[in-house]
Structures are given as structure tokens and as C-alpha cells.
Image 1 (cartoon, rainbow, N blue to C red):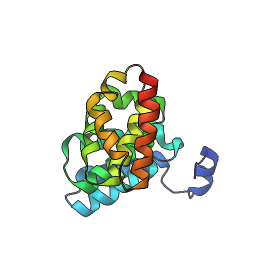
Image 2: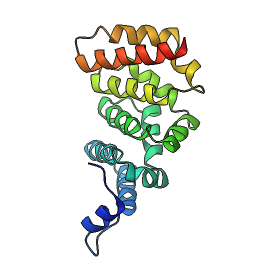
Image 3: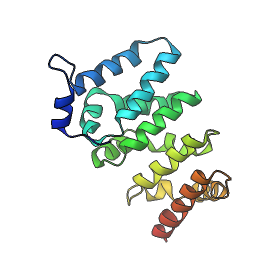
Length: 177
């Protein structure tokens, strides 16, 4: 559910931690933890915060988007990639976040996730590519290689993947012709 500043203030105890500080604490925990389980849990929490537009500025300011992009570019762990791809997918609706993702070379790792064996990660990738598609990204997103891969995904038994791939093919391929 989306929040307003007034709702956040109302739900924050008088001596409680505000949203930006809380996100900053999560970033610190992720960066300083050596526990795989803790990293997964924190990354999942950060991806959930990325769902609410009221958090977008805080997420950029405290470096959450940088963590998501770092994970997409450098990690191979399926769970970490899933949470990071979900976070990027949630954030890319915002024009400032989309620009940040594109300016920080986030498109190639998102494209690479189309080959993931984890269906939800692939769904996040397709959705992110749909949201990031514009005149600037057209030549990178609407390629024969990507379109061929997405055509195969459109035949998937997984209805979520099949439907998203079909939307991609209809919207992205049609817009580019």
C-alpha cells in the first residue's frame, strides 16, 4: 500500500527512527554483514521498500539503488539476484530512478537475467525492460537476440512469463517497427 508523508509520521513513534534513517541502517547492515541469510533478508526488505514511491528519494539518497545494481552486476547467487531484480523492477517506474539505472550501466545486467532459471527473476527482467524502453534504450532492448529469447518465453508453461513476454513482444516490437 502506498504511503504519504503524513501517514509515515503518524505511524512512526515519537522517538522512532524515520524512514530515511531506517533505510540507511538496512544499507549498513547489508554492507557490513558476513551472513548470507542476513544479506538475503535485508535485500528482500529493501526490495519491499522499493515498492512504495514515497521511498524512492530515500532509496537513492542512502545507496539502496547502488546495492541493487552492484548485486545485478557482480553476484551469481539466485536469491540475491532475485531480490535485487525485484528492487530494480519496483524502482524503475520513477523517471529519476530509471535515469540512474541507465546512467550506471544497469541495462546489461537486467538483460542478462532473461536467461535466469528463476522465473520470478526473469519476470522482473522483462518488466524492467518494458519500463525502461524509450528512444534512448530502443537499440539495446529491441534486438534480434532479445526478441528471440522473449519469443521462447512467450511459449512458457508459466502463465506469468508467457503473458509478460507477450506484452513485451506486442509493445516493444510493435513500437519499434
